[in-house]
Length: 115
Image (cartoon, rainbow, N blue to C red; front, side, top):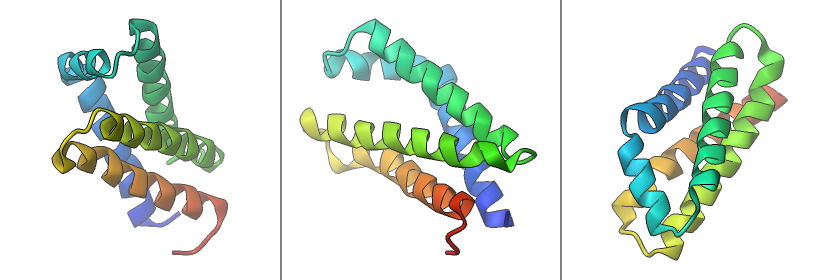
């Protein structure tokens, strides 16, 4: 695994931890705006934190990286859909889009596709 992939894994994980722990009130507000129940928000949050943890653990156990990156990428793709659904400005799309791109990069690298 190259240093850029490791950095991408850490950026994804750190971003998720910051958003879902330090900025939870923003997440709660967005999920209300999407008309999604608290249970869905909690499941998404738990899944994202678990996948972020696996991305960090993947620095030592590479077999964890691909499923974690694919899971996180799917959640970021879902975030794109919901931003589009409620017609957010382009600025709101950018963080999840950037993380989606990083997830694709990490997943492809973990799968053995050289980028």
